[in-house]
Length: 176
Image 1 (cartoon, rainbow, N blue to C red):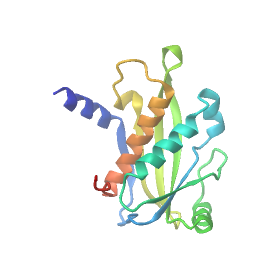
Image 2: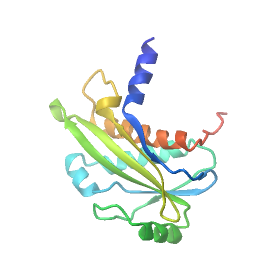
Image 3: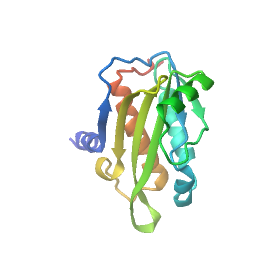
């Protein structure tokens, strides 16, 4: 019963905000992910924000079948990339899709602890939005103690990314 309650809480904060009607498969393709939008602002609040985000994305995507993941260091100066910029980014980096994410610290809790919200978008190589999801740790996670920023960044990133992968019906690698 207790595990059902925790599972339910983790799903409350995750939402699919948009899903393309066209069938797009990214299995076996090369995927890039960009640094967080406005990383310099986030780093003033919690210096390791982008490192925790990057590690969570990389380690999560490597659990899935045939996904070739590449980290991209391009910045878009606190504005979303245009379709032309995404097409050029994919062409230059030889990737088939790219993740673009915006993270916000939503609520400051006592003793420097933070709740986190992330909006994650996946674009194809033609610059078309495939799917958009979000995860809010304030709504979707139950912590027994005040969470440290690294934990909420990790939980929000993992929640939004797994929603996208579930919507795309991408299976995990078989365990050995």
